[in-house]
Amino acid sequence: MSRVPLSAPTCELLRQVRVLDPVSQTDAIADVLLVEGSVVAIAPQLADIPAATKITAAAGQILAPGLVDLYAHSGEPGHEERETLASLSAAAAAGGFTRLTVLPNTQPPLDSPAAIAQMHRDWPPGARLQLWAALTRGLAGEQMTELGELAATDCVGFSDGQPLTDLNLVRRLLEYAQPLGKPLAFVASDRHLHNHGVAREGPQAIQAGLPASPASTETAALAALLELVAEVDTPVHFMRLSTARSVELVAAAKARGLPVTASTTWLHLLRDTTALTDYDPQLRLEPPLGNPRDRAALAAAVQQGVIEAIATDHTPYTYEETTVAFADAPPGALGLELALPLLWQEFVASGQWSALELWRSLSSAPARCLGTPPPRCAVGEAAELILFDPQPEWVVDAANLRSLSGNTAWRGATLRGRVQRLWLLSS
Image 1 (cartoon, rainbow, N blue to C red):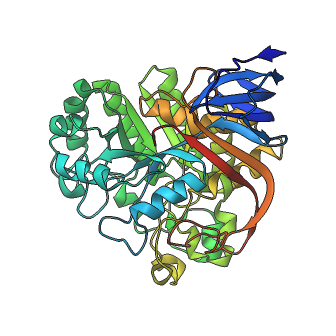
Image 2: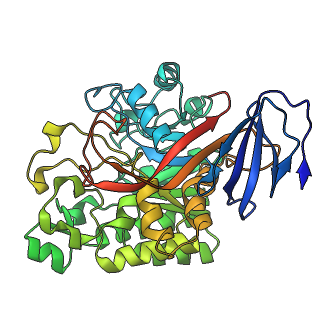
């Protein structure tokens, strides 16, 4: 039985909590002592705790590193009716995300140092803000931004968050960005093959009578981007992968030693084209939901680490914007407050994945994709932690959501599992 100093100042002890740390592969029941925002002891039992220590019985709950979201959308500035910075930060914290990486498609877009600085100034307390700076001016896909000037800001990397159609421009971006030491993220999609499809090509799209987009919309573009990476050798992250063939292409690229990482979204892991029979506009995504084979391949790839990370791609819209026919709906849905409980129940509670596999894909792996140190649940680390209880039930409604918008297919549903607390030193 371990002992801790009696002179410790402001202390909190979590009794018999389940400790997860994917970096050290720790999954154990322990007592955890936090002193003034740092983890000072983790042991099967801790004794001789100062009388002033706050003691919390945490059996059945999970203490783990905060989650890291690779890409999300902000309403503010430009569409504050969808989401403000305050509601976005609150939604992230409520969902267990201690780091939130926002895409540059605000109005005005994040394509200048001034825009980056303003966003950071306006960000409220809560989850830590990380920003993708735009690759092209005005996100128009035509002219490069001043990458060197943007790299001198505290942006975390570069992405337009949407497909680039000019491969010559992509090659130049790879060349110019290589010495800057910040990640680039691309969306693989050939707009000509896409042909305004709103569902992945296959039997379900035919049955639903929805305009279809073939898998080659993604895979043809991905293959071309991989060839450019092979030539220029600049590290690249591929966002929103959605097909089984994309998994094969990324696995082959990694086997060749190409400097690539990849992510998919939580919704592409939980739903596929069989869910489109109700024509729910909240499941209108870009890229579209895959076929059942795609979803199975994505889940296996995440478990194996071929796809490193799961992103929320949190995309708020107002009620009026989504109360339309499926094909007319804007693509995207909420994710920050729903991803962890739904993924836990689907994959961990069912026994398909270990808890560490899920946490790796939502925390340490996304941080590494961004080239940043991952949050830890380990002695000597500043607290960047969440306490997650997988048991309590709650209803997805306006009273329980921090986001201003409610565009989710789970609206009105009862979920199990919720973040109880968040620790973030110097948030």
